[in-house]
Image (cartoon, one colour):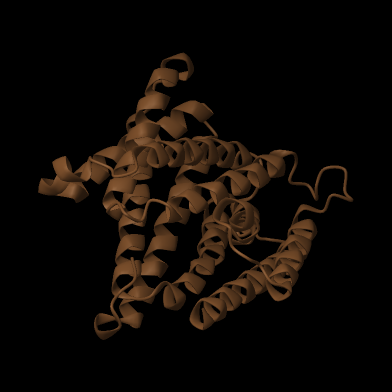
Length: 294
């Protein structure tokens, strides 16, 4: 999903990636707000159901052909992992500030590096291992296990750590379905999540207000547009040019948290975020160097 060098537009790719992160954090903020009044299962259902509708619109006339996968088993496994990730993340943000939750999810690329050894057969050198260790030290700073209540953020942090782990597995499988069109992957994950949660949601239903219905729809809109922007970012520019800008999500998360919940990350969170982001960028740099030399 990388652009051809002759057609690469880095500025456009970076702008698409910034838009991607805004959409995804807006999605997280809306879900966190809804979780204050509606059950976890219902909010998770809305995220997938309305995302399916958005995905269908994006696919347009290509929908019949995009519904066919060359690797249906892997696509199904990806869908299960994303559903699990979403459920765990939603459970986490019920008690954890949005910026802190976003920081913990920054562990994802570091976990991908570790999991790529057994799952993809990749070799990780001492330098990348050092970066991973520093990143996990940053996570310890954010979580603060030496405090009984994990620095005041409660046990929701455990759900977020599990969400990061499941999301890393999801990303690993995403590397294995590159034979499919990216929109096929989007359709599979959105549709599978909608089908499974639709069977569960009747037991957890609370009738929404008109405003809540709009927010439910916004979940699908932000989720679908986020994935579309990500596809565009990776299409017009190389991943190495745009991936580092995924860390802009901490800015959006801080702004949403400040405006809606009057939350601002404390010094521990900023210090941990600095370690995690720095290590993630270093690991990404080492991966790019290794691929260039291979």
